[in-house]
Image (cartoon, rainbow, N blue to C red):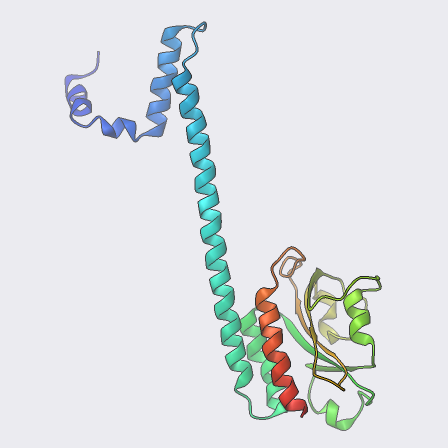
Length: 230
């Protein structure tokens, strides 16, 4: 027999039992045992299916909210990085900012600007601009983006990588494991360029990720570079 005090509390607040999932499952299981094995309680089966659907809906809801927050955080990151990129008043400071505070804001381990040029990379003017700038021969950008394959070149390419040389990343090439490559068009009559972001985390940049924010960042960067080049 149920204790009188407990029975009175249940009768006074029956919704407490209804809201307790574990307790309701126990009551349904006891009811099924009381009915015997030759009787199927469709109510219990329906409740289990409804609970399963509810759990899936809750998981989907959490995933959608998490993705929305992640997208918002990524948008804010890109906006802060663009403002930092627009602050410098000289091209040299622009490159320093790109490899420093802009890279930190975007949470990448390395940023490189690749410019195709017929001018030698050993030119004193170019060497003074620091490690962020990498000057390559014409055709380098398309070759690097394709990775030796006959594939169409996309504006933004995300991939996991193990650099075969230190040509772009320098002494950081040993621990770069993923990269984002943004093809840059500097206008008619100018050779193309490429903005490279490298990360130590092999899952930081993956082909399955969206590229809208990086495409927007590359678009602003491209227009900024056109002004510097002019």
